[in-house]
Image 1: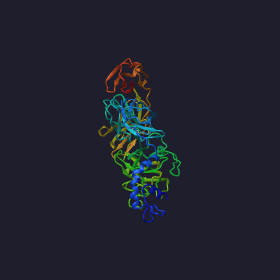
Image 2: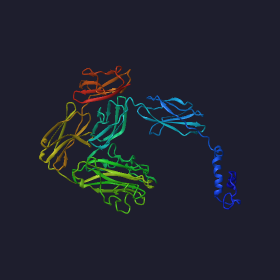
Image 3: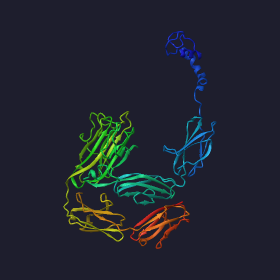
Image 4: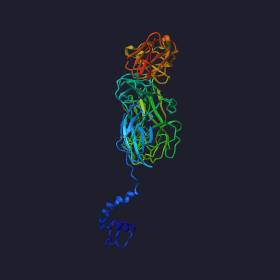
Length: 609
């Protein structure tokens, strides 16, 4: 009846037939006749706005013609057309961030905005809303860029993950840069534009770049260096994942999502994989992302030259909703420093599925369709896995990685916990012996904290080379010097560079088949080393830079203040100051270069404002 009467109000007349809304006799129907449609349709168009608009909300006009000007290092001016309401909400945040630096209401449509934390060399989003009582207009958004003319430091690392003695390439993408100062986090610095740096010790390194002595960008954990071990490798050495420092490292090899996290998990109904203690897991408390990504957990590098037989072992937990996707995991190895990777094994007693199987992995997960998944979404916990890797015996440069792969194209299956790895170890059997008499290494400390090493080798004819190695902890060693071919001698001595902390040494002897044995390890502890401290490192032009010599001033050869370009500002050869008046020096960043009598050099950076 209601539709019937509304039809009459919109110029509809009774239909001659039954079964329609405007039939003379009202029946229960939802049908309009063609005659009714032709009569009522134009009336809806003509009368609709007059009838319906009063029933709707009051429109809140958007702010128009926003303009930004006078962008400084701390603020900018904003202006827009005034609205009839005359009240506005303004928000500012760094582009790509979710947290706003500033959010405020104002009745001004032309003002200076000074957001807390506003910095040079960044892009910001400015949002302006018109306020209409309790509602807001649609937003107006504009992107601005803070000043760059003074120079902005930007860079990336081409190969940020590796093992000891890894070379990292730094790509400089700075804007308006004329001078550069790099701090690589390992004691090394550089003024080159895009340097290559060798990292000899395992660890995680923050890297910073300063451009024109003004703007600095620091990337946390920019370079990750994994250690090297001579197998066998036990759970107690770090395979139980209860280590501190760098031992295993996650890295996204395609896509943008890093899946791996280390820690503990008690297991829940939605995230059922629990840990015994610490373990590596694809999300400690989260399920798989709806994304396409391959995320790898990299192991240390292993020297497999001491034994004929090796086996790789670990505990594995798996929870996937389906056996063919959207996720799977496989184990891969490399013998060339990570340049190329090959899947380890293809036996279905090691993996759970493969090609031509009833439920092979989708090619979008792994193209070879081999890996670990679950059948029937039932989680498996701490299943021991073992594989013979004796075919890698004789290689001194072997690394492994667990690759977890997720494809985002599936319609379901992401409500799963993924994968867990724990208790990684490499067992060894049947040692390879070298027919070389025991080699005894001795070490003593010479003047200037320089270690003096000596050793004797009886059967040098059996060797292709021997290498003197050094370590800061007695575990992870790196090369100091190498002797090969005609340079091999029975009696050997070597004077190392000055050391500033406890150091360990050993000799690695390699025969013509590539097999190696090691001497005893000798520890050398330096005597007190003279060093220089400066305070403060950020100096006001009205203050002094204070210099403290810890140790003997007589150990110092000279001091020099340098600009980042290398230009000399001041120099002292004998009488070294206890403070430096910086009032005549330009604002910027400088280096205090200290050369010691024993030849080693210390650089301390400070800035004047």
